View: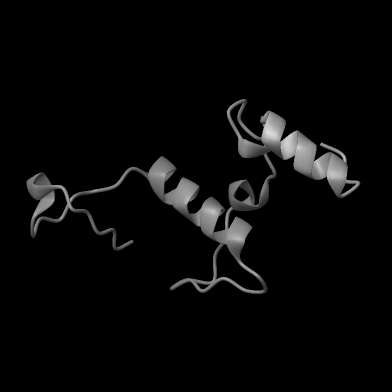
Length: 76
């Protein structure tokens, strides 16, 4: 995985990335994909496709979001 950073400590350096970080990036990529994801290997992990609960500080838990969702008839 190629990961870019503005952090000067990593300027031009190869830094190994833990598999947990790779899995989280792939899970996020899959979540936002409309139809397909592209990978260099024909492999996936079930973890990438597991839905998780939104964190407590997610936008949908704010008063603003609840108001918007109520206006549009969606359950919060």
